[in-house]
Length: 96
Image (cartoon, rainbow, N blue to C red):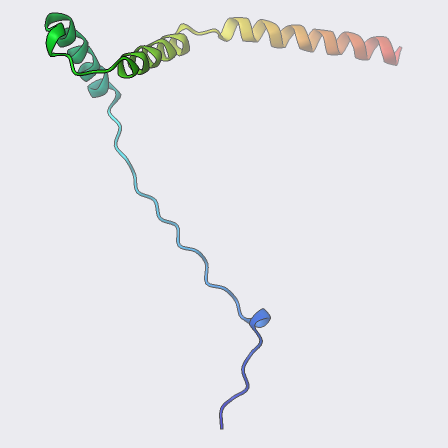
């Protein structure tokens, strides 16, 4: 004789396993390789195997990094301060 089967809604599911594979990223090495490739292309333009899309991607990546390093935080801070002053002024006007 077999024991009665438990309905599936009483059974608990096993938790999913978390799998994390860390990746190593060396920004300094990547920048050095980009510089080396750029200089080698300039010295030997006939041996260049990079396509226009690769050149565009690398220049876009450089521009993105430069814009992040510039520090547009002062403009953002001024804008946030303006919004706070505007909200406080509106609240004062409506509550008075």
